[in-house]
Amino acid sequence: MSCKVKAHSQDIAGKVRFPPLHIVAIVSLSGMETSMVMCPTCGEYFEVVPPSFDELPTEWDYDCEICCRPMVILFDEGGAYAKGLGE
Image 1 (tube, one colour):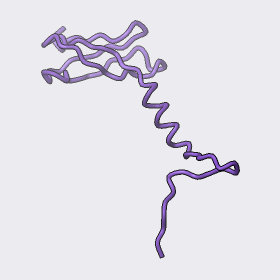
Image 2 (image 1 turned 120 degrees about the vertical axis):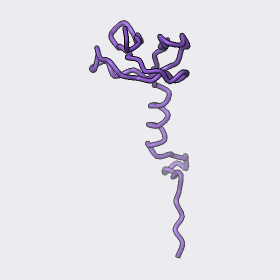
Image 3 (image 1 turned 180 degrees about the vertical axis):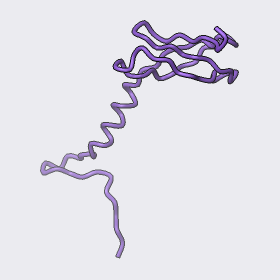
């Protein structure tokens, strides 16, 4: 006996219906917000996904995605700011 998995189903009118999971994945990916941060060591810009508004203000220990040097990223209502560990 074999089992087949259906990727979609049809309603009474014959229209194809996809599971809600597909819609949720598209919405969550398209709604992702990012913040540009400049590394205080190498000066290159990269993007990070900021925390939710409820968590502001906050600080993250982070390594530069370009030069891998450590930094602290400060998030507040005004945006994201990076500073070196010695600053």
